Amino acid sequence: MWFIYILKCADKTFYTGITMDVKRRVKEHNGSRLGAKYTRGRRPVKLICVRRKKNRSLAAKEELRIKKMTRAEKMKFIKTK
Image (cartoon, rainbow, N blue to C red; front, top):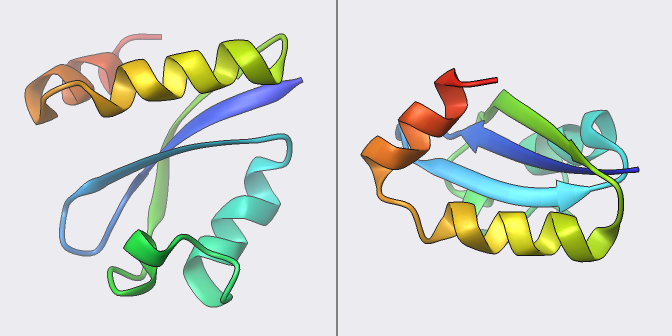
């Protein structure tokens, strides 16, 4: 199972990624060199949305779709379940 996750950074921006282990990945974003370059300068980050996908391909496609959204569209996406 793969997960798409959205983080809210300290500067109020959003970061979207995919992983098989959300808890580990958020921990990496908050305190490790393994976190994304984007989030390293925007710590702490907070997990605000998680969605499940059957495989990596579907997760990557959804990640790309979310990254192309405007901030308002992302906020609407986050609020829907």
